[in-house]
Length: 168
Image (cartoon, rainbow, N blue to C red; front, side):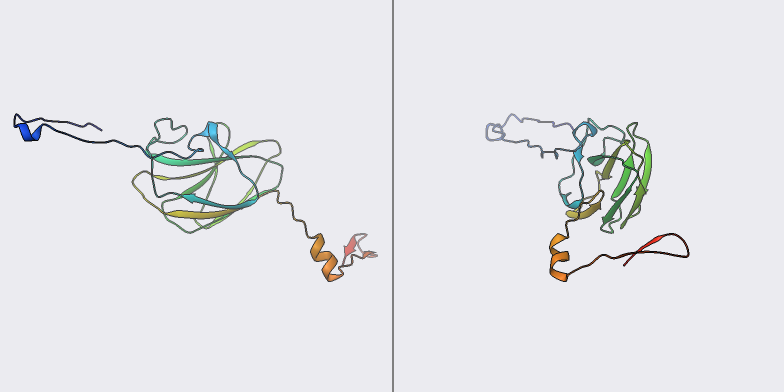
C-alpha cells in the first residue's frame, strides 16, 4: 500500500494528522509456531484477516492458523461448522496436502510417529466471525465415576464356536 500526501500551499491545510495501526496476527499464523492440538473443542476469531508475508506452503493472501500433532496409527477426527470458504487441511512436514476435510469435518487415519499439521485457512478477502471446531484424537476418557454410580460389571465368557472372548 502507498500513502500519498499532497500538501497545498494554503496555510489552513498544512496540519495533517494520520495514524497507522496493524492488527495483531494470532500466535500460530506460521508453521514454525504451530500449536499442539489436543482432544478438545476450539474457537477461532476470524474477524480480523491479516496479510501473511511469512506465508509458508500457502499464498501470502491466504490467512492460516497452524496446529500440529504426531501420528499414532489411530484416527484423527474433526467436527467443523459448515462454512463455505474455510478450508481444513492436513499437511505433512513437506507441506504436501494429505487430506482436505469437507465442510462439516471428517476422519483421517494417521501413521505412527509421523508429524502432521492441521491448517485452517481462508482467503484474505473473506471475513468471518468466530468459528468453532472440535478434535477427537487420542482422547483419554475417565469414566470411573460413571462405572461406580451404575454398578457396571464386566463379565468374560469364552465363545465355544469361534474361540473369541465375548464382553458383556
